[in-house]
Image (cartoon, rainbow over all chains, first blue to last red; front, side, top):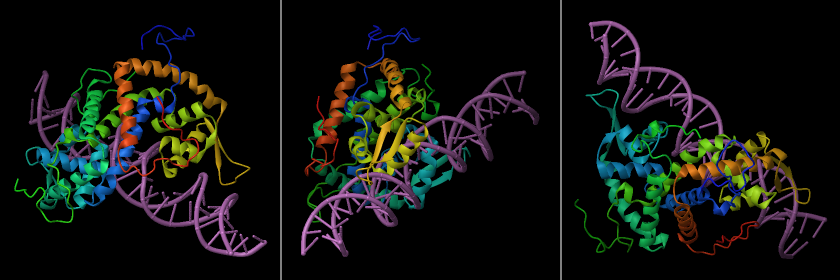
Length: 174
Length: 174
DNA sequence: CACGATTACATCGCACGCGATTTAATAGGT
DNA sequence: ACCTATTAAATCGCGTGCGATGTAATCGTG
């Protein structure tokens, strides 16, 4: 997508407009549809565990990395505090995690697994086996797609300050 | 930890459990994160048009395929009526579309672009040029990712006759 | 033609997802 | 030590996303 003015009408921008792509040519729709598709496939399996899709992701981080602060979870999941804070309360209400203020720094809230939350891991591993069978796609295709998605997240957009927490994502002015 | 019995457990399921993958090994998280990433990148551009991400997708369908019923839009966008119905009212409130009952079949609601909605297409084409520059990724990578996502939606899950008898949902080509 | 089944859409409730604002606690400079 | 800036979370508002339910119009079959 160079700056050759294919269709420029002498407007203020030097960037050429794009012939309107059809819906199925949009990458953003492909992402949208694939994400929703995954949700619709996965949620019935998650219901057997009694958690929602994003709640499951929180548990995955806790199983993998141990107790941590709300901000650490937000950074790992690329999630906003405004999403995470109420969600953690709902997971706590289900008895899977605990939340308590750090004694050393009263601003921080430490999230930890309960025995019930820890125990859920084994049932999850069983469920994941069933789910990957259910997906019915070659594992290498799934892995390849996953790696390309990660590359997209790493590579697309402005390259400065990639490590900042979500909250610090600066607005884009073009 | 103390886990065992990969296949030897005479339990209800003959399917082997999966060693719990880390967050970054999850395809579902890659989809989740990439979708949210695209939203964060794209929304600032959409705000210049005054529409939200899913509202934009509705307009794309109308620009591409002309006036159609709510169900046709839902099928094309793989969206629920419960999502689409209130959203169409908000787009209508912005003056971009009209909704009216079909005289032939009073159950159907026909969605059509207003002159303002039609006019927005040119500004969108300009914006898309800027956005693809902003993404700063080779086009072939973006196209390749898009195609793999479409393949995932087509291939993942139960294969029971994906042929929906829904009007307007063309098979995906290219 | 009657009448139950189906269709097309609307509505409601709950859980995100995120921008904007608020609150409480800590860090840092003078 | 004082005061301000910064940081960590929580809260609020709006817009999805979807299952469940409701409703009116049409269809299909006797």
